[in-house]
Amino acid sequence: MSTRRAVVLSTVSTIVVLAALTALFLAAPGSKQVRHTFFSPHDMWQSLIGNPKQGYYSVGEALWLNIRMFLAAEVLILVFALVIAVIRQSTGPVTFPLRVISTVYVDVFRGIPLILVILALGFGVPALSLQFVSGQSAAVYGVAALVLSYSAYVSEVYRAGLNSVHQSQVAAARSLGLSRWTALRYVILPQAVRTIIPPLLNDFISLQKDTALVGILGAIEANKAAEIYSDTVFNYSSYTVAAILFLILTIPLARFTDHLIARDRRRRLAGAIS
Amino acid sequence: MTEPSQAVRIEGLRKSFGANQVLKGIDLSLATHEVICLIGASGSGKSTLLRCINLLEPIDAGRIWLLGQEITALGVDENAVRRHVGIVFQSFNLFPHMSVLRNVTLAPVKVLGTPRSVAEQEARELLHRFGLADKESDFPDRLSGGQQQRVAIVRALAMRPQILLLDEVTSALDPELVAEVLDLIRELAAGGMTMLIATHEMGFARDIADRVCFLEDGLIVEDAPPGELFTQPRDERTQRFLRRIVEAGRL
Image: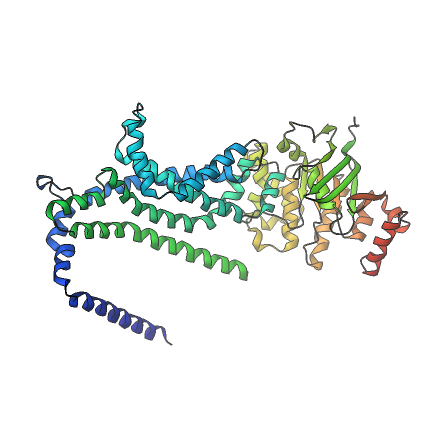
């Protein structure tokens, strides 16, 4: 089949499928009602720009908080998860207690639903009435919860990456007199990165969305702003706006991840041939 | 105690992997500028012995001295020990994400603190000396097996080790590439490098070694100059091993 024919066919089939789905949506008995409550252009625009006088915030502006929480959490997770992974990979008897603690930590925080971690930190820590620690904003507790929960996952991603580098590389590096840390830094990590990056970005796409959960603590992020709008105006179009904004945020990262995976695959294949 | 002319001394070395006892009491000493070849069937403990001397494997019992200093004592800095002992592996183990030049200069720069420009100059000299001058910016996967193994030897030499351990360095090579690596080792021996070489190349061992040790089942069965060991082996186990080698046409 020629490339041109393939393009035409795939375009036609895409149009047919989309048209069928749209027709189904429009033909549904409650279509008009749903279109009004979820896709009202007026409400979408109003919730996007916000109007404090009417008692609701801009969903667009609130998204900025999601972005900041995401960026802060991302950096902390990258560092913290690596520490956990390296501790779990260590073999010496001296680090045994640390290994136990990290293993328990990973088991516990991978097992508890993120929303419960957010609630526990967001309502529990302020109740402790500790100086400084208890006086933070909801967003700070949210980020702390995201870091705790995601680091448990990401440390496993790191661990898989570190394990993917053959032991003989460690032996070669150490035999040259490189310390454990120098070997990790210059020999093991650079080789592990190609294995780590795709699943890592995958977790970060998920992290971007999960910043929306911090809204339950009262932080005005996109989802919370959308909720306030719908509570005020009794129209759900604000949620549609939030959904679209999250898509705009996550899709570039998703495409970038695919690009990296494809590039790595090409390189591996090229390496196998030469 | 041990005299300074002794590069390595080993007493009663034992090592097990789980229930599998690989070394069952090895005694061996290697003088400075001496070349010893370790021969024996696969699994006889040759590689493990070399890895123990480099402290890549923790030992179960026994003691090892390196240049008069006990390296199996508590509190010995293993990184410091490894600066004096280079090891080259059967499977090259070059760092695939680094160019040849970076492979060779990594340890001098990061471990010895040699300025990069100086380390690169020294690395180029070594690469040139061993016929690899035009390969410095290539990555390992662009090189033949023989070239990779020569780079691995150069990488070990860049640390200016006083002792070099070679672990079956030609076993993973295509037959036509073996000679270039063996020639390099001969050159090192002629230059006075102290070496402990595990090998399956009997002809090479006969040519190069001052002494040949035959290992079987975790023990040094016979330790003699090559002229003696290859022509009139005393131990019955050595005789049996050499007979099999001759029958296989490898000597």
